[in-house]
Image 1 (tube, one colour):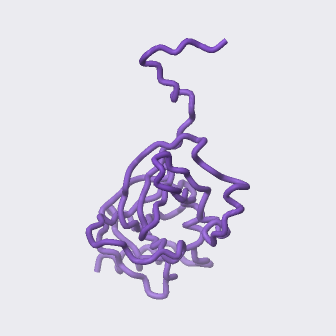
Image 2: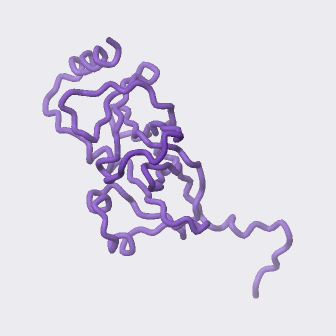
Image 3: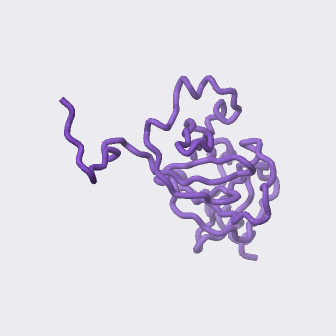
Length: 186
């Protein structure tokens, strides 16, 4: 026997949702779980690091804390911003296992939204897609947009950080921090 539904009942309360930050890179839409974002900041002066991998945009001083900034364009094979009217931001990740704060440069933050779990595709369906980003572990899956605007690529921030990490060997951390501080604040 079906339960009676009265006006004002919200049937969607039983559907688990995932909260995400949706952003744009070039012409593509991407998303990251809200739980993996510590903050969203305006793009500041980014200090380039000599001999750093091309996916490393550089460093910023974020409230006295040196933060590495990743440019994901190379990782996702994305072209330049589609418009100069965009409002670029840095998504600063909340990754407890990372010793240094890490952020990612994006063209624009589009929304903070929630998607029902059934709109998220992972596993076999996603594995059948032909994508270098999937093969490199940069994506967790895709989100089917209910408004019919297509698919949003669901980004794995740990995968992004891993893809841009450099083996530093046995670098003296205090010496490195002093060198970085001099680069960021001459």
